[in-house]
Length: 344
Image (cartoon, rainbow, N blue to C red; front, side, top):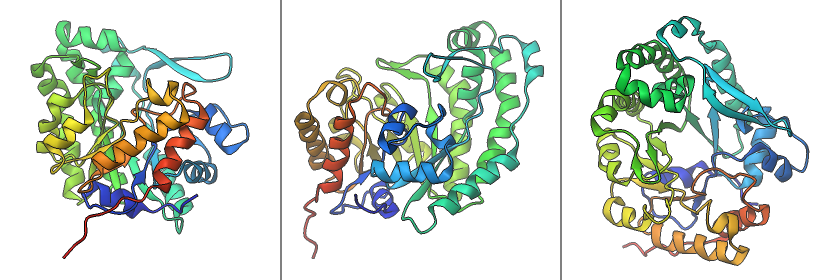
């Protein structure tokens, strides 16, 4: 297993072509993580594991970065399945009166989690990617997806007030994280499905972009790169993300052929880096190891030219992916040597 090296990831972010390609799988479903570590784990999100276990998991996954996320699960209705796994099913905060139920996370606990992780990765070669809480996402999941989208039309004032009450904490959390030596911050955009945006451009400008722009500006003012996680087909919004200052797109789902990473590279590869795209619902879940290896190598050879590509899946690694296929993807990247163009 190769030693973690954050410069591989950061070189890709800066679109510096290098011989070794970065691998970065941001999240592994916990039951899969237990199989990788060969021991039972508590049914939590991986970044809620003890720091020592989480670092070991990331090392065995072949990652160059550690992702840390202090998720605020405000108002979420979750169910626990027969194997102890937690699943989100709806939000519980449906009316303005429910806003009185808001209680804010302890920033002291978040400070401790950052400090613990920085201590755990000291001297390992890992970099730290901090995933900040996002105002629209917290509100969406607290209300519930269907009711949230209905409220955008029938009760926009409720959503604005809810976002206002949440945004102050989210900014405080981000500002706290930015006082530490983290290497990159990841923001998110949750308004896409496989066909494109799920709301109008006017609604995106009103409810999604203000807080997104505010966060990106704070991060860029600190001189740090920004990764954006957006599920679904966001191709037509890439110019917006570039204008905001985003450095990396993740995870770039193929979306049943509707989103072509090679066309994105051709159109925007000199302006933004790409992270992901090995198809979760295709080759990773259903292909043979040889097919996975072939697909990974094609991605590297077509996307790493000129720098700007980090290899990973098109979402997160779940039980749908055979462990052999995950290892094949990882090892294909770790063993590959890109023939960089001669200089001089």
